[in-house]
Length: 158
Image 1: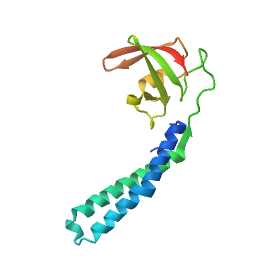
Image 2 (image 1 turned 180 degrees about the horizontal axis):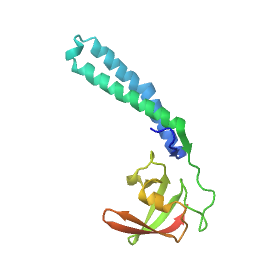
Image 3 (image 1 turned 30 degrees about the vertical axis):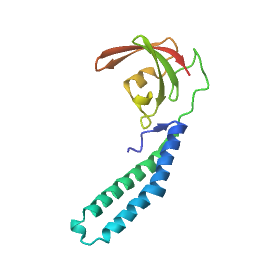
Image 4 (image 1 turned 90 degrees about the horizontal axis):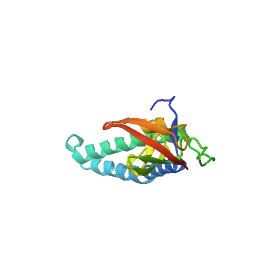
């Protein structure tokens, strides 16, 4: 993780990361440490698959803990725009109703660590996210997609 890149999270996203950190610290890591200890007592470590697996899992957890601590330390919480309606510009944290391909779709613009396209949370670094930043109601944006260019019309900024 680079030191100079800003990490944007919604308040909910930050809480999820803190919850994961707490879960790993208080529950998962102690369980795996116990597995390592029990496997160590089984004898020859060079041929002990359980010991190797437990050490590998512990290493993964420790890496994730380091990553979570760094993310939380560098996090910039996104605050929803106080302005709503036709004059509101799309910013990080905006919920946006778009018209695309004959139907309406709603997206939440979030930081890249929180992005989840299946849950309609798009990163401000994605092609659509970049195109939407600064736009207002009735603006149109064209985004290159694998199937060709897609035209979106901003219907509402929440």
